[in-house]
Amino acid sequence: MRVGDLLSPGWRSNYGTGRPLKHIYVTASSTGAPLAAELARGDGPPRVYRVEPLGELEDDPNVTDKRFPGNPTRSYRTTEPLRVVEEVLGWEPPDAALVQRLRDASGELAELGIEAID
Image 1: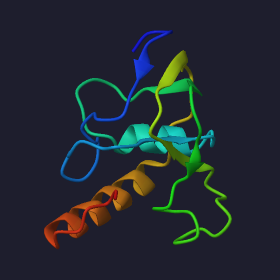
Image 2 (image 1 turned 90 degrees about the horizontal axis):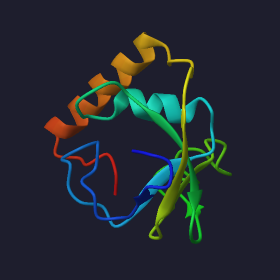
Image 3 (image 1 turned 180 degrees about the horizontal axis):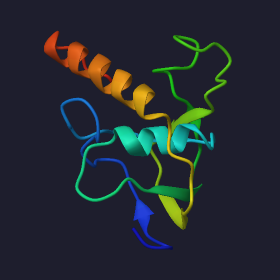
């Protein structure tokens, strides 16, 4: 991604089965973004980008009020494009043990046929 690039819904998910999504998911958390980057599938190193929403954001119903009432994770989604403002460099990687636990849990869910992202 480069500054000015637009991200739009319809890309394959970096999680679960990788099916195309009708939303783009974002977080305003400086710890959540690196964790999501580490957990995402793909070639190359994990990356974190600061983006500008070009439409309305809504609370991510996959975590808000289901798992974390009040949205303390600052997790959102949108059906509108996002503009890349900058790549965030020098971010602190999450604890490797936490990343492994989450990967293991996602694998167990996948074996049961449960998709992690709606």
